[in-house]
Image 1 (cartoon, helix red, strand yellow):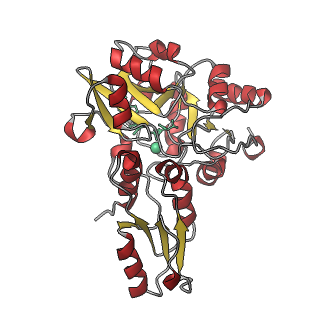
Image 2 (cartoon, rainbow, N blue to C red):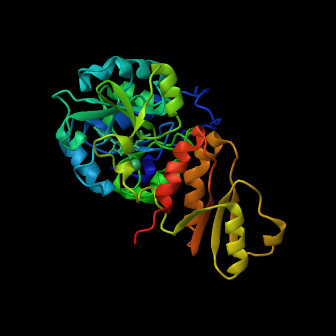
Length: 346
Ligand code: TXA
Ligand code: MG
């Protein structure tokens, strides 16, 4: 199969919300992508969160290949993407009432539910656990592909294991290039960070991975408190490994004043900065400092975060300094990703 010739131009200019995704994908392209999945191939697909690397979730050989390409340990589970909530019972059983409520409130959307698996789910999907992660993505290309394909699509983020997730087709091409069969280009992802992952323990919702659907939003739908991963005996989540989502360049998460002081103290160091304010006048003449002014709006910041980190990382600088973000619920997922990106192995 030819790879590069199959990269599909399906550009849409996304607003920073998940509304308004109205453009219809090309049927011939979607048919080709579904055929690739059916013969056990790998298709990178856009979702509203990040690009996923998709394989037929009921084909163990395709899944094995997916793990190899991603460089992911075989015991890490992957999320099964389905086209609508009616397909939930193909993959999960003993579904708690709270899960149905969340599915109804947030699907299609950036929420993954961890539920008891049905016997049909291959061990390669679940990493041998007795649960399966499932979500209905909110992207017209992903939904069209799911409709055409008919089954579940197992899709981790389409980056090499431990690296920054892709939010544009070009990111996937740079990371995985010719190792995969097809990349569907659906433009820049509207949400920009991975889905919120919720599991249930004795009916109580537990947030395993924060996302742009916040604990508060989940609590308001369910009328009950959520717990987070620290307080639960939760199953394995690779996104919860300390060093995850990491650029190659060392990342430091600091107050903006400290970052600026550091620039003055080290004028010859090549530094990338991700801040929420413009480059100060006093640093304008320092060409060693690459300054990106990110948004002060959490949704817009999240949407651009990985592209910004990738852009800075690609310049092979000595260090990346990221301004710490507000301690507010809508920044939780961003803070989580930044902390993992900033983790330094000792
Ligand atoms: O937004 C997203 O969730 C993106 C898009 C492509 O859908 N996908 C994504 O997949 O982030 P991945 O594989 O990079 O992260 C999925 C996370 C992993 O940390 C995995 O351990 C966890 O979901 N997970 C999957 N199934 C699980 C299960 N049965 N129990 C606990 N964690 C599970
Ligand atoms: Mg990932």
